[in-house]
Length: 168
Image 1: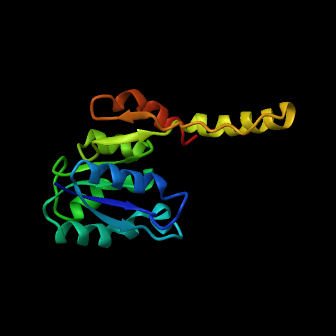
Image 2 (image 1 turned 30 degrees about the vertical axis):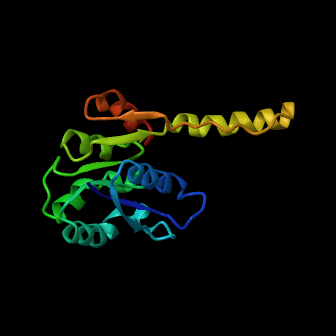
């Protein structure tokens, strides 16, 4: 099997998640093509800028069975990438990180198959709690993994409303 993983691989801290995904895929015997995203975050700001790169990678590797995306902006744009490459919904297993209304639409249309829900409320609340505990109680900073939940075609409707609320 062959997969494409997109990410900021050269960024030591920000690329850790994507490098870990590549390692897990390789451990499972999957050949992985790594596409480095621009370090400036251009693709997150405008995911359409990645269309030529992703389309070229898919056209040059017609046997790719999965594509991994580094964030919600790009995962929310999956239908655009797949259609530009002449692919149909569900033909390629598209996965990534985050939830958003666009990703929910991707699930509804059959374009997105898996995402890690990173619980944005906890990502915002826990750092404030940690800072307060450091200042008031002298405790060490918290280190909490908020990305343990997975959203799939079978359960995306549960988080659909929460994804909309995150925009408010």
